Image (cartoon, rainbow, N blue to C red; front, side):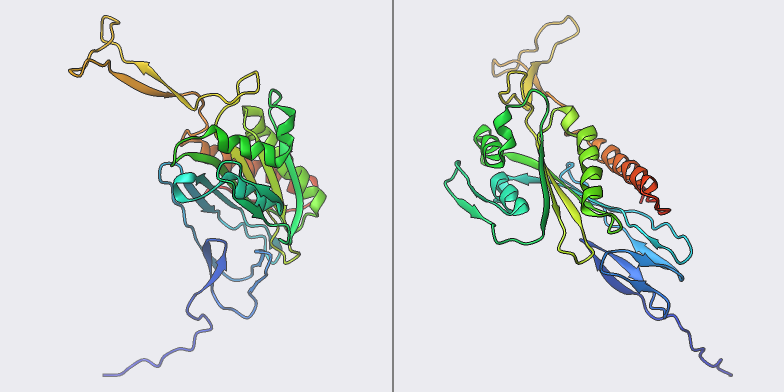
Length: 290
């Protein structure tokens, strides 16, 4: 029995290339280069592995398809959404202090969070709805107010959105990009938003956006996340239980926790990013669909 000689193939076993919390699979070719910026010069095939987790709308991670334009450098879309919860030992004050590189005391537990030595804080901004108290422009006041408004040991304190920013943009361009996205998707819907852009000049600029989860009333006080409503029978009467209590259901006061929001926010980020890529004369485009 004759055996066919083995052919020498230029293609080697795929090697994972770290990128955020997921990975891209790079086929090792002489003309394929992965740059620290997360930008890729593509001449040969690059396969993508997408990690997407969505459990109770607490964590969403997505890497989109890479758009190839010959040998041109292209941008990669990355968006991560998660909840900062007291039940997991997290603090909104600590999260804000770390991302902004500031010293903030948590009035809820008295702990001091000092991240003034943190490097790479390129830009910070707080955006508020029109009816928010003006003192909330102070980061310490804002997040301590959030901490004080939540009494439960397992309270969800804030939502974080993390965005990869185009390395092709300068800081001013990225700041305008993130500002428009946050204004249209979060602040305009009543959320308080704390924006921090990190850039260590290593080609990996990104933005952290902390969002309040409790709505503000028109007088500037914190409102309820949900309320209880009686369930009625066919005659419009309350349904009494054997315990003597009446059957009720929980009604959320906002749609911020709607599971469909993740897909909407992802699509809107892609659209906003593509708008700015075109405005600043870049041919690259991103696609939020994984």
